[in-house]
Image 1 (cartoon, rainbow, N blue to C red):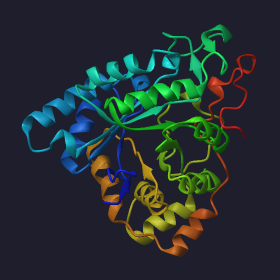
Image 2 (cartoon, helix red, strand yellow; image 1 turned 45 degrees about the vertical axis):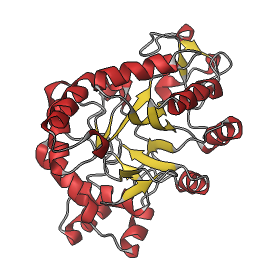
Image 3 (cartoon, rainbow, N blue to C red; image 1 turned 180 degrees about the horizontal axis):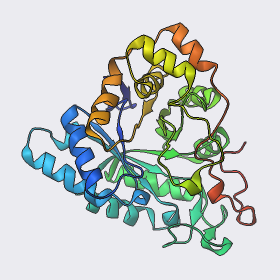
Amino acid sequence: MKTLKFSNNDSMHAIGLGTWKSTGNAVKKAVKDALEAGYRHIDTAAAYGNEKLIGEALKEVFDEGKILREDVFITSKLWNDSHAEGQVRPALEDSLKKLQLDYLDLYLIHWPVAFKNGVDFPKKPDDYLTPQEAPIIDTWKQMEKAKTDGLTRHIGVSNFSIKKLKDLISKASIKPEMNQVELHPFLQQQELLNFCKGENILVTGYSPLGSGDRADSMKGESEPSLLENETLQQLARSQNASVAQVLIAWQNHRDCATLPKSTTKDHIKSNFQAASLELSEKDMEKIEKLDKHFRYVTGKFFEEPSKGYENIYDE
């Protein structure tokens, strides 16, 4: 299994279990199945609403004693309603309580957008805090304190553009250690990857398989399908692999971690086995030609120009 290393030599598996949209007993079983299959990297977030169930699964596994807490890299994320002064630590402590953990391995600012406390999803402009009312650097300073206090071993961001990363780096005492963004052959983001590499910021790709199971309200008309793409299907056939495995291996060949989500035991195993799939330079060149800068997660649901959020991704 390929690993990504942090500056302090902590490492994490390049293939983790994604849990966005996984709920109920399905997510609990998925975490257990994943750990049994060899996964040692679990990704969740306060906004997913599944931390409590994941915490139950982790406790049951750790109590058995075969897999130790320190063997598993666990990530969660700060929701947009906890950016203001004094709100980061309570949000992180709430995640730790639900997950039944003493510390996280990685804590991320989920989006570069701030809501008023208690707002799960904005319904009107008044639900937002402007970037002036809740500056990202003020949120980040609370993240830095959480790391210093040992609540999380590493801190980072998610859905941050080069512009936003540059601004944060220029003001931060501790540089973001991770940027988790949407990544797949239709959205390769090479410029962002190059920037992060130059700044020693690790990258994790979400929605690696195209997130076909997300809510219809988040989907556009006639979206392209990664799993049905002819080039990817041909590559999969030539490797005697699934398209999903090719997509996961592609991420790892670019030195990115990735988070395929599944609650099906066979798919969980199959996704993990992509770690051993080798793609040639020619394979990678074929995939490179598929880039069309297409986003499945547009971020438009958070755009509110009257509150200073015109273009989440600065493009």
